[in-house]
Image (cartoon, rainbow, N blue to C red; front, side, top):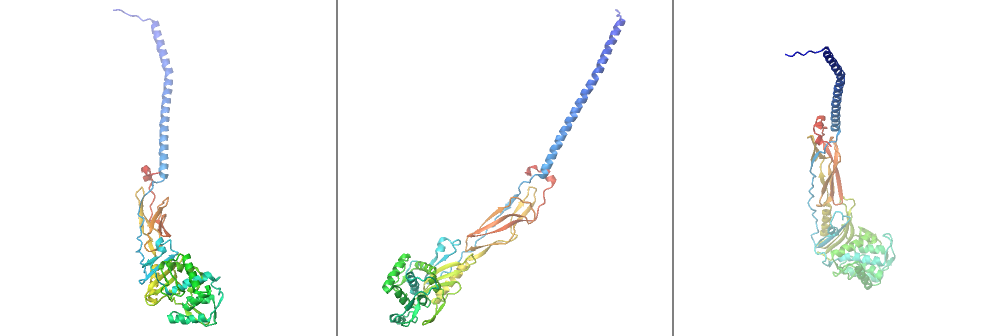
Length: 449
């Protein structure tokens, strides 16, 4: 057995080493503690930072969600369509041939209707009787014009041959008025006696005075007819007593418009009666005058040949009255012709009407919000539109840009168009919708703008 002996020096060295190790450990301990404290502090800072970021993000989301605009509602709507009334039934005179032309209604009627309705053959030539005198007056006034309807014009003195015309036409059964030899009358009054009571002796006397002879008058008449494009009209004498004085309803509408545009003729043709020295008190043969009938001239050659060329101003409820020119040729009697014209004008008037297009409170749709609430859209007022016959009525709707869902809030307009007229009505909400809750906003981000 070997025995090891340690010297004192060995123990001293070991102790020294242990002391050095302890001192080294003591020096290392504070540094490690500091490192641990730094690591813990940094970790805490990181956690706090993350939490603050999370809280900031949550806060930002909450603020956004509670204030963001909402998605648009879903809208279900039906623009109410309006059935137009039945087509107007125009009561065309049942006798002979007839036509009318209407001015002032082009926006209501189609072009062919505003040009005129015609019954029978528009180009059929028929005797026109004393309507001839309207042509005679227009031809005379072209050669011997009067400045105004108040201008009496030159004075005519009637000769013995003029006086003889009374007997001539009396024997023929024509209407006449006294014309004593040596009596005198203004041109205006002579034209009035020719047109108002339809005195045939005055038609020949005044036309001869204006042109010097009947031959010259007839030549001037042919020139006037040609110049005005009246190829369907024939005049062989100035009164209409001859059945050879013929025309068509198409030509007569044009002649009626020419007469209505002549201030002197129009004024005379609208006069119900006249009172003159010599002829005395004379009534217009056009017994329809007054009210809406404003002219022009009757003419007939007996039963079944009664004619009327007329003008009328017809109030129908539009912005302005209609101006009608019409003609009937070949009526049974003066009364039946008058009845037919009255019925025709009444039927035109009846063809214009107010059509109800909406009633207050009428339901036309719904708003449904993203959070499930629903409210009705209704028409806010009664509405109607003025139109003619069965004119189509078109409707369209214009919605508002924003909606707050308050009761009575206007959310658009609905418009109707019929011919030249338009009308509108407001659309409003009936009832109200409360805004969505905060919880709904926070839990439905996809429904927010």
